[in-house]
View 1 (spheres, rainbow, N blue to C red):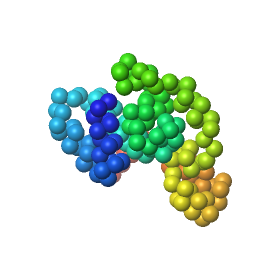
View 2 (cartoon, rainbow, N blue to C red):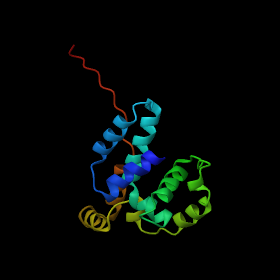
View 3 (cartoon, one colour):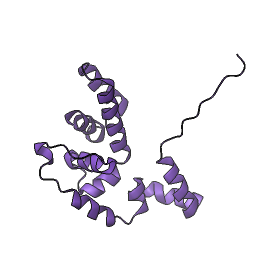
Length: 147
């Protein structure tokens, strides 16, 4: 958890590149296995991408603890029994989700970009595009038949 929060602090507040931050943190912890590295990288990239949505639910852009808790909640992972998470009530997250009415916040896009794309593509088409851009790409296997 400290590694994820440290990475997020460097990326979001110190404006460092995420790939370089992750590379540095992985080099400084060679004892971590593949699953640890995968979890940390996935969490950092997901939180970075959906930062606006997670911060809207948590109620704070500065509390990385709360934002990480929202991420775990959204992924369906039980909050660890750590002192940092003792006072966090996940019921608050459900209530906060119900009160988000802006599609830009739900999809985690800046308002200016959302409005521009909506104007250029039309509301219906942009909603489909925005949703598609937030989903994980499908795996496509290709065989080289020339060899």
